[in-house]
Image 1: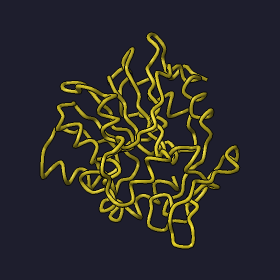
Image 2 (image 1 turned 120 degrees about the horizontal axis):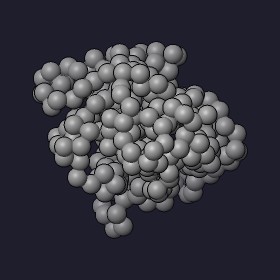
Image 3 (image 1 turned 120 degrees about the vertical axis):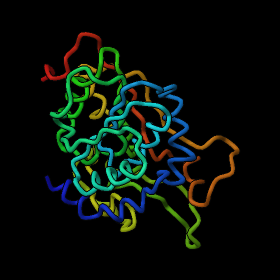
Image 4 (image 1 turned 90 degrees about the vertical axis):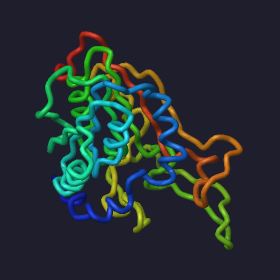
Length: 256
């Protein structure tokens, strides 16, 4: 429950941080990747898992998806519901736990999308099992995490005396556990995260009965002019996108 309290405490800041578009990194790098994975979502039931203040839910609803969204933070949900009241898009918001999804029926969704929340949740296996349960047969789960190889407790940019970027360092990758970024102006500097290896993310999904269909590392298009601060992502991926499909006939709740 401590993670919920932390997001409740920073809800107004987080709302400003994310805004209505998700920020330049989302718009220019992440969303083109996700859009290519999702394709046409018109009429499809989609779950926005750990929706926060709902900007992605609104984006998906405007694209024609039938969106259900859950979060544990009552403060963030209040902000999302306030926007839904001002601009009704038919989004169904639930206060729910990602490790249980108790408000949602089995086999309800073609897609489940989770952005940057798996790093907040200690019981990773329970999330995968809950997702597998609410997906329809052959339904798909897209999970976006900060890249575990490069954005980790002992990783960061190395710069020269003038502040110019030289290279990226990464060390002690296998040391899993909770950590706090030293950037006070970022989400992970305010609420921390759980560092896990790539193999931990993959093995937990396989154990829950999901099939891994692909991994994506979003980057800007080559030669595309970038806003200041985004050039680094031509060299080091910020995000890792895991693309899963539910095995037909498998019930996620049966996984050990």
